[in-house]
Length: 277
Image (cartoon, rainbow, N blue to C red; front, side):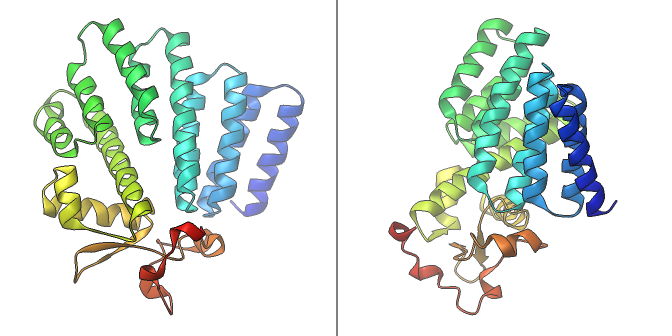
């Protein structure tokens, strides 16, 4: 499927939108997003997914809209837009609230809570967790405990709960989703740390997260490779160092992996003045 096919899908989607056919528009915009993603045009993919979300909400397909918005957030990460990633996660959380109301399914509030945590909206996540507790009256205790631990960034405790308790209670697909949520929240925690400091040591992250060093390093390397942490790991000093060129959108659009400081003639990671950004 060529890029011209992506454009055709978007044109058809716009026609459906103009005709008020929101269900059809949602489907076509989602297909366009998939098409652009296959071509690694991640900003176009994200924008197409966001349009699909809009028409999904208009069609009252709230659950589909929520899932589509998580696709938009993932595409923004590939484009290096971490703020937009978090915003779309927050929007997905709100869509899950609407889906829970429509489908009379309180467990969708928990899905929304995990999206809200990933997006950094801890107030919303706690409200949704409280709602699940009230409605389910003590059911899914393990999942609720995990969500609460993540709102407090207790990664060590959350990891133990996932691997020693929840792994025996839920199926493989659900466990995969939880592990992914865990990693995305960890990535956000590390990004926040890097916003205030140009470099962060693995030792300090080990202490603040409660994760064992080897596992922490493995997770961070994977998150860097997937674009969720805009930094590189100095293997000599065991420090995470901010990529000074992480906002080079033209480069990010075509990259196969996150830009590393070794790709730059003068990384200059230690010369960053955040007051000038």
